[in-house]
Amino acid sequence: MNAAMHRIVSGAIALAVVSNTFGADAEKSITVAVEVNNTHFDANGDDPPCASPLNGAVSRPGYEFCKDVCADIPAGAVVTHVLLSASDKDGGASGGCLNGTTCSISWSKWWSTPEIDGTHVCGHFKNWSSGNKRTGTMINYYR
Image (cartoon, rainbow, N blue to C red; front, side, top):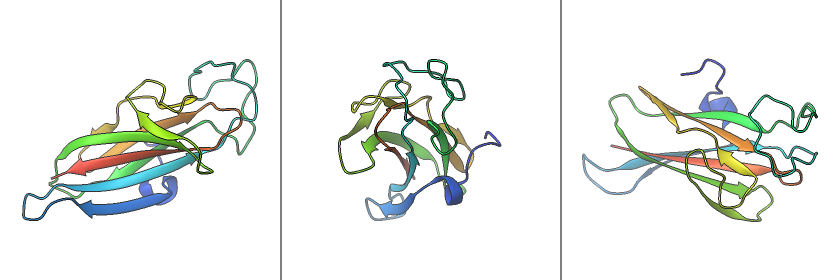
């Protein structure tokens, strides 16, 4: 796991543990979400790498466009699948995301496949919208 990643306590804005079925082999899920501010400058549709300038402008403090988030999975559990999504912070659009591709609401993505390292699942969410805060949600299913 990348040492720079936020733990669920500091990097996530939501946490839920849900049991979808009953019994010893019940599938459960942990949901984490991370909010990423808007960039406040025009990205011209580009999909820039994280930690780099957008069209020569560096994001102002407080207006980052990438964040990492991790979920802690119980010891001995096996992650069966991970679902990724994005939504506008103020209740606007929402939609699914495929690993490494622009989310269906555009201007955002989970920029790599979530990393599974023992009891941690970590993801990297990116928002390059000039006007919308975005929330990236990662649902981790395990047995």
